[in-house]
Length: 380
Image (cartoon, rainbow, N blue to C red; front, side, top):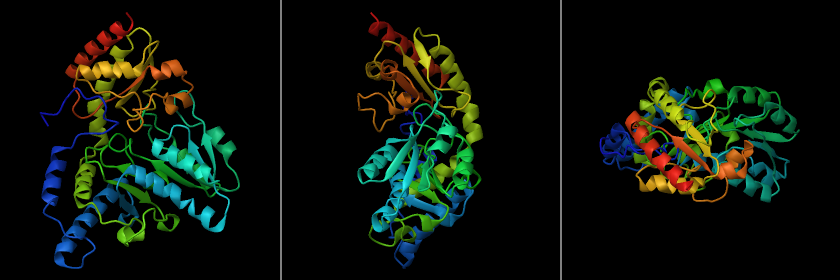
């Protein structure tokens, strides 16, 4: 990994492949059989899939039969939501869905589409730290509320949500809970059984595995319907021949997950970074480090344009984001920061800085020189 660009500060967007993940992919290239085939070549692929499923299930403290492989966390999130659309369409049953104001675009966009079809959906407010307002959640519950969607850790500011408390509220009303754990895996302990959720989505490329593979924990498969229709893959819950290379890589990435070691490495770097950022005139830190994952800092710079800052930094060899990478091409203010009550001007002047395994104090120092130069030039 010595050739990796160590000026990368966008790990919440995507991560490089671990060396062992690369090796696993190379090895799996020789396992080419269709896992649905009954012959030995096909069954070799099937064995790889099921071994990987066992590893992931053990890491999440659930049964192997509760793990479903998908093509991405976006697909996983969509599939959960789609499962609550089917009763409305088929039986015209009233359906109400609650979702947090800071969800990933893969949830927000699908919710908007569901609303266009007539599904009753309401947003749960967050406070200035990005934490779910539990009282507001309780007030929004209706007799026909079927699902609550709240991400475990936010991708832009890093806030960790009180999922277990949300589950307690939901269960009292016989409501299912889905959490997007994409930004949580590897950073905090993720025990799906202990959390009590009904669904939990995850992604490979946020934990040093490749893009194009994700998964979904499903407590009871009777509550999930297929999003894709075709063959009987994944217990008839996800049509399409399985991604052998991606699944092999995901297994190794899950085996490498070590939240304790990760926090020991990243937290001092984050604190070192933060100490320097707050010395900049007009800097406003949106991340509350007491209730957030250890690698994420979201900082606004009064009177400046975040996109222009990001471009200047990029020209100097530093990769940062102005928000969620799935929407960072947009010039619109971040919906997450807006939901936290941050005004539009400061919102548009914000950068998301996310650390990972290959950051060092030295490249933070170099980054700060570049950032201070870019800010000075922007203010002249």
